[in-house]
Image 1 (cartoon, rainbow, N blue to C red):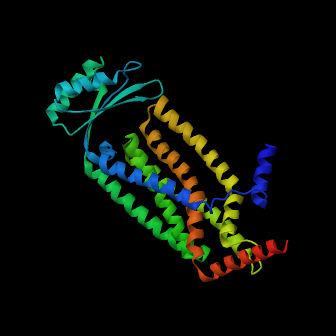
Image 2 (image 1 turned 60 degrees about the vertical axis):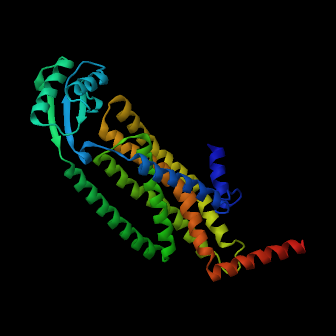
Image 3 (image 1 turned 90 degrees about the horizontal axis):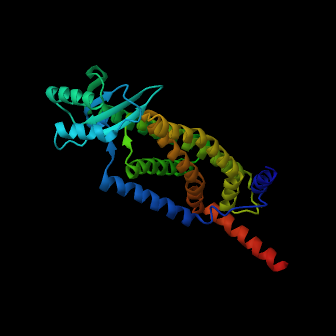
Length: 333
């Protein structure tokens, strides 16, 4: 613990430093490759949309025996409805186990046949097999509302950050990092084949706040460092940005770890032990979003902001003056 505290103190004072801003091409390349993969996979493979988005029939067989067979439900439905590829999930509750079967839309007659067949297959009364139909329009409404919320959030975030930091370049860097996180999360859903449900959309929108929160904390330290630098500063602008990133590095890591541990527990419990789709969908989006948000804040947003400011005439003059002073000092020695 003492060594870790000393490590954090060294980073804060500048006694130890990671050249994060100086090696930005590496971080940008990594982020670019990840974003490209997460864009191409959904384009060629598509998303696995839940029944709320594509519509269909859903059957829930309640209070079945322990460790029920998923293949039994699949074979039962395929036998009655040839060509149908149902989605089967086991849902473990408190002292109860259910089998959830999702198909495309079935007519009334086929729905009754599937209910009876599932009841016989799992040896339960037909009254324990509930059948529901969900239209795709409900999912479309949720999607439209989510898109509106995302647009409104981004507009407000840009305006508020520009006013708070008194520069639009910080807003742009933060929003680019935010889009990086959103694309990564969406790509992971496509790569793993997880269902995109309204619960996943909620988790998707939740990471917006975390991503910007972490970025704002780092940017606040950057503003503090750069405002303190005067005409005789011994650091270039990029070095001041890099110092701020190092000073907040331990805090960013600690915050991410503290946030990831309960989310990881929920993801494990929801997906493995309980089979609770809602917990799994929300926690997966949060887990990936927190990881991506931590990376983008440190390795994308801050270096990108430094790059955008380096082209300003006064920043270039300061960098040139600092470089000359160091060269002169070295020559005198």
